[in-house]
Amino acid sequence: MAEDIVVLERSERKENVAILTLNRTDAGNALNTPMVEALSTKLDEIEEDTSIRVVIMRSSGKHASFGADLNELVVETGDGYVNMSRSDADKHIFDGRIVAEKLFRLRVPIIGIIHGFCLGGGAELYTMCDVLYTASGGKEEGGLMYGFPEPTIGVMAGWMGPEMLIRKIGVGHAKDILLTGRMISGDEALSMGIVQALYPKDELMDRAMEWATKVAANAPFAVESTRRTLNRVMFPDFADVMNSTGEETVDNLMTADFVKGATKILTKSKEQPKYERK
Image 1 (cartoon, rainbow, N blue to C red):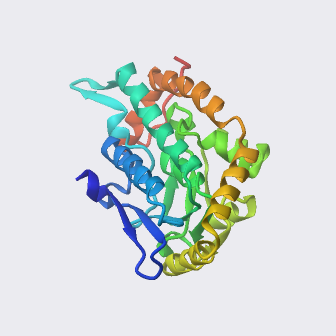
Image 2 (image 1 turned 90 degrees about the vertical axis):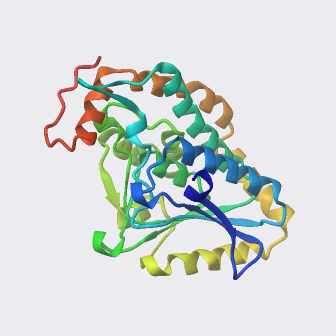
């Protein structure tokens, strides 16, 4: 099961290009523990295989990712939902942050292609990619709906999304998205610099392959050094930030407000929770 929900394969068109696919389509590619652990393992395989020069990261199905799987983040009882244990919350946050760090420090460049909903933890991990292409058009065409709804359910985005987003698109745009929890379209994501190009959904893979082929044709050491240098300059304190902000997200998961927010989503309630800062 763990192997099936994240697939790593070689491109048939370019042997030096690897394709990494999130493949939990029955759950909108929501990231549960087996999926996060499988993704971590696949990234290790990429890092160790020096014949791989570029990675294309994508998702199967209608959506890039619904984000972290809420079913794992609260415990259902006969009286409703309650908080998970703090140790489980710690594991959830730091497992995701380990994957984020692996994406950031990956030896080779990675281009992500996203479509449909790309939310929360899924948006965080895709934002770690060097380049992002997304589907154009409306919902019916697979057009992008990107955002971090975490504040609307009582928690902050905890897998390095806020930290990376502010480096990529600046303070104003990042605070707008992260504090409101609103979703944005592909056009707005392009204008902010979150994604680098919009194409019809059925063209995304071909366009990503064009980019990957150009990069893979270049000298591997030069490409790897360039990626490493650019990331070091963009985010020189990555390790310090990763180690210092995770506990705050864990604290959020332990609040009564988070249980209210998660309950609203899991029960598909239309009633807005009354948050009480506790």
